[in-house]
Length: 296
Picture 1 (cartoon, rainbow, N blue to C red):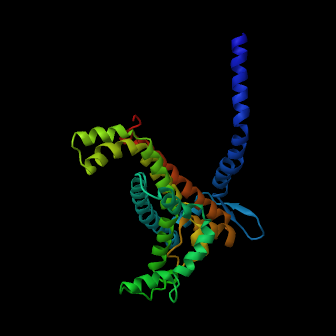
Picture 2: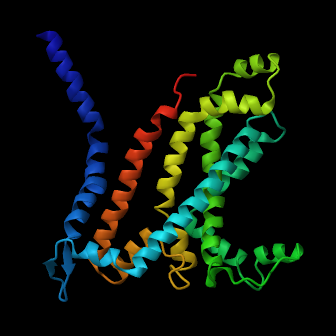
């Protein structure tokens, strides 16, 4: 009986310790999800009343050319920003994992953009992309490339600008995660490979990639989720323009929910976003889990 009582005390203590985090999750995560699902089947009527419409919000949304454009923009933005950011993050992590002079300074310089609030950074990038005196066009002019581009007001350059900002913002963060993964790999494996005559590419292919797979698995998942949650720089720099060419799913939700006060469409779009991320996460986790090597 005493052992059982002690075990119950441990359980009670454990639940008490996780209770603050659990309450936070319920209030700010689980409840909003359930609330959004409930609001997605209602239409906002004049005067603040609501009307039950079933799946009409989803039907209208998927039949809308604007929503189709938003989904296409988000997919392009995700692929074009995630892949370069991951590759650059891995490259810089491998480079700065070596013993270099001023290595800490280089690490800080690459990670620094992650610490800058994206709204503040977007204001700086607005000046960099300015068609008259922006540094981007000045650099293009130096290399005799087209240098009169109105980046933020011309398609497809506006979306390209958003992708550049996202790569700049998140490369350092992914580099830090990859660096942590690289430093957990035993150096004796590389020494043994060197003795056996393995070249650098062979070490990367047969040692680094397999043993870095848990980190790569995690970082890729985080990067894709981040790409569907980007809205700050779009709000500050383009407001979804020109002609919705930079409008992505989260900004579409913001527009309908807080500009047009159409809570039904905004909630339906939120459910779609949640569904996309949930389906992708489940497929990604169970579909690619067998490629991950957790033993080092």
